[in-house]
Length: 256
Image (cartoon, rainbow, N blue to C red; front, side, top):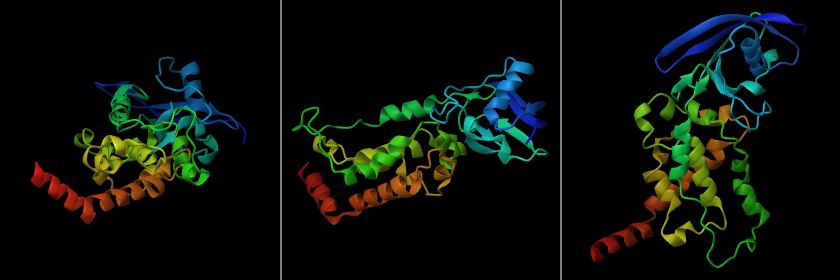
């Protein structure tokens, strides 16, 4: 495919407001959307704000919405669009705009801090941890997350209902809880922390209705819904409705 002129609509503005602006810009073979945004900066709008770092699909910085779909700009090839197509680039809708394509994603870091960290087993010293590979593989997939927050952006619980943000951690961090709950050496239960109960009661697991939209936009191909959220829901339900747990709670309440 030789060079051609593409039509772009790019959102420009700040917290007070903004809108889409039209541009025509050159596209060359093998380029990605981030290349075109950089060309716009270099040739037409030098003050266009965009966040990026590695340009290799590993830092998660260049998240945006391209034709309405949450994507990494550095991993979205121009060849997937026709030459006649107008390409629209807008900031992540679920988070407040800082300027142009840059959004304030601090919500995600606040949620990360709310999740209790891995609790090492007290009987083992650092360097003595041993795990079976099959146990490691259960949660190893989730470690591929690059924290691009595309799953958070596309989740309608966060995206369409601002009032849910206080009570809902979102798929990225519910996946983190699931990862810790699956960890064969996590000793949180010994400290009185029940990750399954807190996932439901404190981090909003019940808000998730498993539409799989988070899985569909994950650039790392993590099966967030099938391998993390659904199993976590099942374990939380088992815990909540376990008759022995119910009886133990009832006895403790009577004693107190």
